Amino acid sequence: MELRRHPRFKLDVEIRVYPRDCPVVRGHTVDISESGISAMLRVEVPLGEVVRLEFTLPFGEVEVLAMVRQRNAFRYGFQFVEASSAQDVIGRTCRQLALAQSGGDAENGVES
Image 1 (cartoon, rainbow, N blue to C red):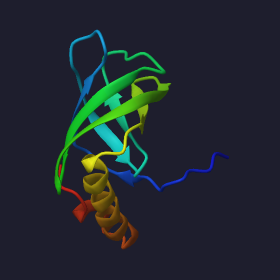
Image 2 (cartoon, rainbow, N blue to C red):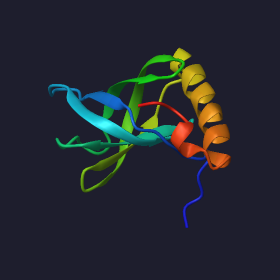
Image 3 (tube, one colour):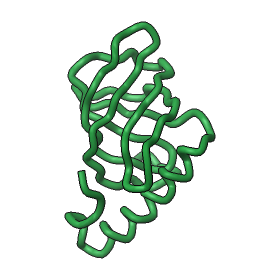
């Protein structure tokens, strides 16, 4: 069993993935943690590539670099690779989601 540094929280928002030499790939997030995010994408993105991600959280817009770490069918796992102002927005959102989802009130967490 794999141990994670940060807990994951369900999150369903639109995401834009900008691979190095390809047009933008659009999809929807599945979950988020302070160290990464997973999303469902319809177009293949190369494993190991660093991409730019853009998505909107309750506390603001996020633009962050991430490495494509995993792929399972259409679900991709991204690990954030930079410390940026986006980390504050991501951290605040994860704390809000932790409160909402631990109280059995996950449906009232983050609006999509």
